[in-house]
Length: 239
Image (cartoon, rainbow, N blue to C red; front, top):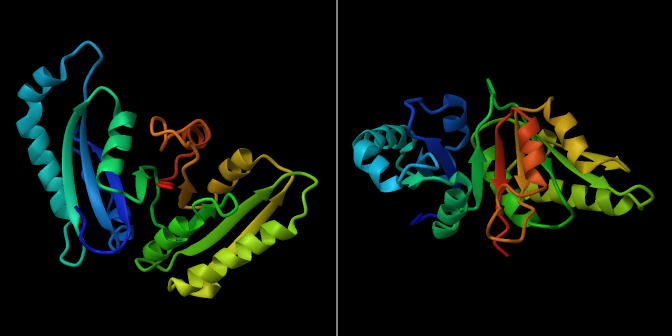
């Protein structure tokens, strides 16, 4: 298990194919502990044990090569290999087992210069801010905090949340001039996030489903992730 107090991110990688890790993401994740989940997809009609017997050696070698690219002296890098018919279930199970703070979802980004961080009130706020603070140590990326309030609602509470989160990020070591915030009034939070992501390189989202099953990629986050091509980090709510 991770030994340091820094955030821990689960990084799932399909080891049925030989693709090198994204160098942009490698740089971004330098300040955190990492659990690399090497998963080998198993077709529905195939027994996992049979596929494992045929492909475990090559999957293990690929996973070891990937882990070696993440390894560094000051942070922990764990690795787990699974042959699975249900990637989502494996994500939930391993994230729980290793007490991961967040799960990485791959996407396309040439560099991480702008990070979008949608906030739902104070839900999971401290974990999100702590993780974004850790990631801010690895780059000079600007961070935009976003919150949406319902139509007809007093926006002052939303402003209070965003200003407080910006101050907390400063306390985490992210320069205040790198932190901005946006408040949306009366729109659709999901639609707003999808529209905004086009202008950013990475989105950090808090999970929304309370149940263990479907927790990380639940009914609220899945439509967002299905429509964006940028990498995302889903911060778990272990409360």
